[in-house]
Image 1 (cartoon, helix red, strand yellow):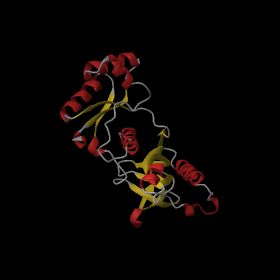
Image 2: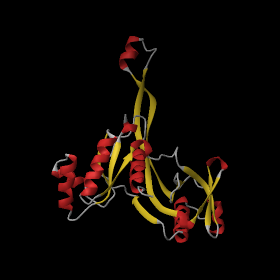
Image 3: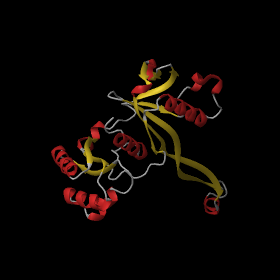
Image 4: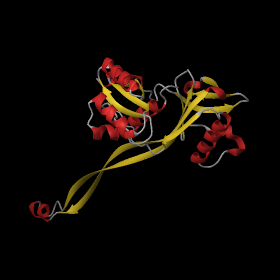
Length: 258
């Protein structure tokens, strides 16, 4: 089962990269080409997906001995929106942010405790099926019916795929979970007061800037604005949105060690 799979994630590797790729190929059984591909780009990267947790741990131990920074991430431990604290509003205090969560709960986080901010853009696809009906003159029907039926009804089915894009930011509190999530079109921006702008995108950018100014020690990662490859990625489970799934896995890899 997918939930029982384990990702071997790399957060660093030795130089030169050719030497690291050779070590990865030797330890994992990948071809040299595939090993080099897994290390293309900056860390973190997913080097392997294994069903056996013991085998994943053994691979991590071997890679660490070769100078890699590596760890195991279980697919079951990947956060999704159902796990996160979804934010509907917030207020800035002198030392902390008070986040208003779905359901009306409040969670207060000190600025100094924000360890990581992951910014990205989530693309969601949906397919719309439309039917249109038209009537056209039918000579055959007119002849057969003696002129009583002159037209034929034709139904045409068309489908189109729509893609919606929405900015998001996840805030990770050091040593505590789950992540706090703000989404561009799900946040009530009235707390901005006179600074509120007509466009949600401008308000979202302003909120993110204000958080970063107050939490200068937080690591900031915006690679998910235009998601690059993160190495090997497990396929999305049946019924899940593939883009959301990939984004969630990539965010979990980025957040390793928080």
